Length: 630
Image (tube, rainbow, N blue to C red):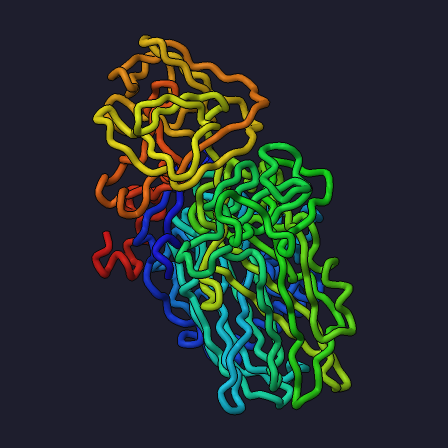
């Protein structure tokens, strides 16, 4: 479990309950195969595949379960029973499920038949399976898989499980080999520690079959999501594989936890930037491409022509565009190449938001992009992926625009699901998922940055001179506080701004124009985003504490600038919060402070404080409460 996986903050006022902290994990439940016999698990899984998988064969993606169907309802109850959930230890959960079944039965009696469909009727939950490429040891291939249950702003309660089966290709001989389950209260961003590691014989026409159930409950809205996901991949001598070329770190040895994407800004710290024809940052003008930084040039940010991703009009500055390039290999069987014959719907690229919850998916269908690889062993994909679309929901406002995804490291997840032919009479499944943060080949996420000051803003250098922001050079030293202390300008960001700028005036005659999220230092020393300031607020200036007399907004067409201040050694000596500067007399923060200020933060309250009272009894029966995590 990565330390941030249980963190979240509210995004919509309509969901006040879901602000999360770590320790919301309710402890491991029983593995379903420890509480349910293998024959029942196999029978239930195959029933779900028949009624849902064939109607909507989206490999690995969540399909809505119809609780009015006795067979599907039995599947849900059996899986909960296998994991140790009962009406006695989880009264609220079973009450809510009973009500959900009544609603499903009412819809059915009214002629509104519930058909298996991609998860759409919910507040923004995505349920899908991650399937690793697997590793060989002798004549056994071991996979690693986990279910994702990621809801926008989380949920009051989320349960998810996964069962792995060893099956022949016809699925007439199937046995259970591994299973796991888990639950969360007042959380629900991911379940990357609910893991199975099935070991399947190689080259015996066998396949690993995986299925998962998710239940998500939102007590504020009364909504519930109950879904089923299924995926499979055949075991072959040379297993299917997927390697990712982009996104990546421009300096692999930098140690950064995220590749930094600067669509509106450009600076040496940016791994990628939106550029014009000269491969220089477009600075708010409509770009022609997004490029990886050319690290051979150190004086300024210049894109690399060999790692450049062309823009397909129309360009929208509010969208998040991620350079995407990868190679999928269908594998081989006893020296015979496995040839791609079909691309399945489960082939998708996602940005998973581990802090605020939910996922972003591409506007472009990865299935369509991969069609050109039919009858080849490999698929080489290069595209500029547009991630503006939230997990499909009914009526949900899009939550994947740049302004809502900035300053949180999101996980980049690619799944390619295919049918291949390895010289046998029938085609078999080959599915692989790559997760950028957890795959040992990568270990980084994607971060989108945004903040700045208007062109012409005056700043103070170490020699006492006052210059415009556009005149500052890397290596200059800038005055950071009223004591005259200085820090080195390590990087300069420059670009454009689409949103209205915030214009501030105070009673000492200072006036400045800042982007909405740029930090302003208050009289007590704490930073506050410019967009949250109001008249009569007291702020720090070069002339002491001042009172704001005017706070207005206006559209701005010029360039904007920001700085990264301080070397590691300087910042270690100066201490936390020292990375500030004077902008037209106002004391403001630099790019790093802006990132810290606007990044999602955890709610430190205990779970019972955040959880609706009606769920308290369920939580008090959970493993984490019994263990003392109260």
